[in-house]
Structure formats: structure tokens, C-alpha cells
Image 1 (cartoon, helix red, strand yellow):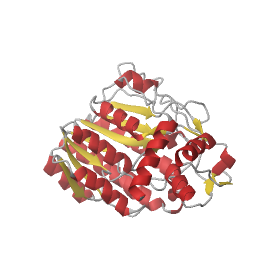
Image 2 (cartoon, rainbow, N blue to C red):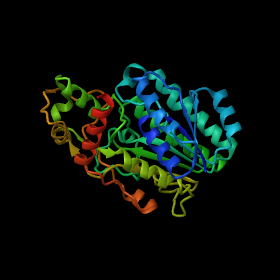
Image 3 (cartoon, helix red, strand yellow):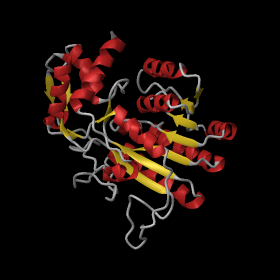
Image 4 (tube, helix red, strand yellow):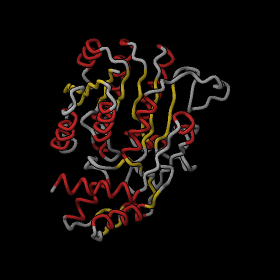
Length: 334
């Protein structure tokens, strides 16, 4: 198939594109290579993809409406994996306009491109952050998500609503994937594992928020990619059991779906740090701080729907995943 992967220079984007290329798909990768974090890391990821003859890169901002329209008109994509976004919860507190441009305007451009090009299936990244103020665990797609606690979360919830509108109006099959704390080799420098590793190796203290009373459903990158590809291969269909008198947020009477992709095994933050200390052979100097604005104390993915739909659920342990990251980090940064 000919597949568009937006955010191809990103962490999840590179791994997803590589998986598709290895199985023989033609992949066009789009990214604007912004400087939210070190551009050299993004360029190194793209260099890995450039080794594949069936890969082509287009430098383009998804918020560029004209550019996106021309791209879709010229390429004739069969399917789209939309992973480009302005990421980060805390960054949204100080830079809200970046989220409006990338996550809202950019997503409309992707939807419009898919609509006019009659794309067979759009798979897009949502986030566990949409669960916001929810406290019932584990987080289920059947639960309402009407209480976001960050602008980032609000834009991801908006993406789900926008996708449903296009599924309803134009019959566009859309599937939203709520990712839970993704980590692994080639990860983002603004994520906890990367920050912790760099600080420990440099002899600096690490910031442990909510005084360490945090749980996260850490999900290894290979498991995320496996879920994305399996979902991509099964375009969304309308649910025969959908009841408009008691609507289920997880499905619809149009070709629209939502899935959690998480490990379904929440891990205490201090246990995660302990796994990192073991992989590094060094003990961290911990600086305990209050919970940050926009953050939540715990996440936990119910992955039953994903398992039923595609016969897969993430399973990589934190010890294995953290070990893989540390090996990559030492090699990449020498």
C-alpha cells in the first residue's frame, strides 16, 4: 500500500514508518522538523528511514493548508497514519497557540486531505491524557472523557470529535489510538525516561513529581507500533450494536473507533526509576516535588477492546524496555 505517515521524524513516527517499510509498503513521510527538541535527533531518525528505497520524505508543516492539499492531490494515498502533533502536557501551559495550529488546524487539513482523496482508513494518535479528571481505573474507551486537565488533552479530545464528524458526514473510516506513556529507543528528550537517564549520567538530581506517588502505564515502542499496524490493516466499520439512546463513546453507527494502547500494568514511578538505576548501574539523586499543573497521579489502560479487534495487547516489561532504551542511549550519545 501507499501510506502517508505524518510526524515521520518523530519517535513513534519513525518506528511506525520503519515497520511499514520493512513489510514492503510505500511510505511518504511528512514532518516540519521544528525545534521543540533537538533537530539533530529528528534528522538521525530520518536518516534511518532514508536507507529504504520505498521511503520518501517531504518537509511540510501539517498546518499549511495549501501544502497539505497539494500533497494529497498528488500522491493518491491509500491509508494515512497521522502521528504529527505538538506534544507535551506542560509545554501547552506556556505555548497554547502551537497546539491550536498543529493539533487542531493541522488535523483539519489531514481530515480534508483524506476526504477528498477518498483514503481507505485514517489512523490517528490520540492520548491517555484525554481521561483527565477520571479516577475510575482502568481507563476504558467506554467512559466519558469530558474533563481534560491540560490544553494538550483538550486538543486530543477535539481530534476524536472531529474524526467522528468526518466519519459521519463523508463515510471516512477513522480510528483513534489513545497511547499510554510510550518509551524506548529513539525516544523524546522531553519524556521522563530520557530526562532521568541524562541527569543520572551527568550526576544531576532528577525531579520526581507528586513526591513519587505516581503510577504510569508505561508502554514500549515496539508494542505501540504493533498495535498501530494491526489497526491500520482493519479499517473502521460502523458498529451494529450502537444505540443512540445510550451511546457508547467507544464506537458509533458510522465507521469510527477508539482504542487504548497501553501495557495494562501500571508501574509505580519509583519502581520505574529503580529499573533505570539497575540498567545504568547508578543510583539517582532524587528531588521530590509536588504534582505539576496539567498532570495526573495515575494512568492505567483497559486494552480489552484492542485485544478483541486485532488479537494483540502490549506485553513488554519495564525491565526489558528500559534496558533497551539505556543500550540505545549509550550507543547514540557515546
